[in-house]
Each structure stands twice: as structure tokens, then as C-alpha cells.
Length: 344
Image (cartoon, rainbow, N blue to C red; front, side):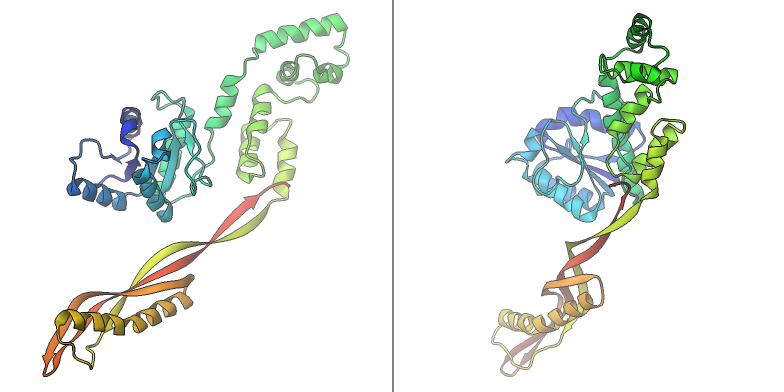
């Protein structure tokens, strides 16, 4: 069974084909439902693949977030509960309610290239999920911002030199680099020439695009710009690093061994004896689940008895039944998430 499951709306199949080819070309094992027959066999195969997957890529589009996207949202919820969800966007839409806290990778402008920085972000996220590691920060938005800049270094340099000669400001680099006219082009040229304590164009863009309060983003900036203008500021923000903890409770199910002995009051038919045994088993099932929750990081919500092997014996006045099975515990699981914060 493939490690990666792709959840998508059938109407988006033509675009998902590109994604599948790119992922397989990157050496990843992908499962999707293209070509499966209809009926119960089709549904069963999808469920088996979803349960076996180690990573689920959910494709958010106009179709999958709309009223007809129930199956996609159900598969996304399943993956989210297991902590293996990697959402992407192929259209400029917001994710459905309940999925906004997981940042979707923006592939709205992606044309199928495996060298595209946003696809590289997807590959990194998938690889992290498969390895059970945290998803690394995305690099695509920063690179897109860099590509969108329209200032030409040569043109900026020409403006800089012309103004410098025209205004005779070479003796006052700080004034020239800070002048409001034609910014940020003038400042970028100053940075490339080492004038006025100005950052280079690339450093300025990277600093502006970094994730606020992210320690990892500051470390990355220092690594990429060891002699940069913002090096000391990044180091000072790292020095005031602190960690906060957030407690969350998520639904969970646990199954515990339950043996229900035969009752003392016979029933006239076997179905009624089953019902009586289930009612009698409810109390020990709840006791088992509450005990399990009290000794672990869970909160008890409800319990039900699930018989698997029945034992029924006829008596003079009817039938008595017991069973071997499980107590199905519906719980809330406590999870502690640590958040590393650098800066204010």
C-alpha cells in the first residue's frame, strides 16, 4: 500500500494528475482513486488506503470546499486526527471551517515543475510527515516575493550614480542611502556596495518576509546572511527566546478487553438475552474506561460494550447469555504543544 494518500474532488482530476506525476517523479509512493470502479468495493478500497497512509495530501479547491466536497472534508478530518494532514491549495480560497490553523501550501500558480519552490515546500512537508517529524517552515512565499520585485539592480545603480554625481553626496552616504526618492532601489544599491549600513536587496526581502516571532526564521536569516545588517538584531531576538505550552484535547477512541458473565435472570428468546447482557455489561464497561482515563492523559466521555463472542446457555425458564468482547471508550486525549517564541 502506498504511503501517501491524495484526497481531491473528482472535477479537479486533470490538475491532480500533474501533482501525482511530480510526487512520483520525486521518488514518493502515491495512492489516489483514479480508475477505481464504483460501488461498495470502491469505497472499501478508499477507506483501506486512507487508514494505511502515513501522509494525506488534501487538495483544497472551489469544489472540495463547497457543498459537494463532503468526502474530501471527511478524509481531511480523518488525517487531521491522526496528525498526518498536509493541505495544499489549487484555487484562491480559504480552507473549510476547522482547517484554518494548518497552513495550506499555495500551488495556485504551480505549473508542474519539481523545481518550483512551493512544490519543494510540499515535498519537504510530506517527507517530514512520513518521518514523523515537524513540518519545516515554508520557503516558497519568500522566493515568490523575490521574483515579484521589479527593480532592476542595474537601473537602480544608474539612478544611484546619477543622483550621487548630480547632488555631490558621495561624502554623505547615509543621507543619500536614506533619501525617500526611489526607495527601496537606492537602499538596495547602497547595501550591495556596502554603503550607509544598508541591507542588500536579498537580505531586506528575507527579513521582511520572515515569520514573526519565529526562532527558526531568525536562525535561518543568520545562516544565510552571516555578515548582514540584521545579524545583530536577529541574534538579540534569539537571546530572549522563551517557550510557551498550549494544552489541547482531541477526541480519541480506545478499546479495552471486556468479559461479561452470563446473567442470573433468563430471557424467553436469545435476542432478549443479548439485550440483557449488554445492559448488564454497561456498568463494567464504564468502570474500565473511567479507570483507563484516570491513569493516563485522557478524559472520559462515554463507554459502550462491543460483544464479539457470545456464550448462551438454555435454562429451564429460558436463556441466559454472556460474551467476550471489548469496552469501547470514547475519550478526550490531552496533548501539550510547545511553542518557541523569539522576540516580542
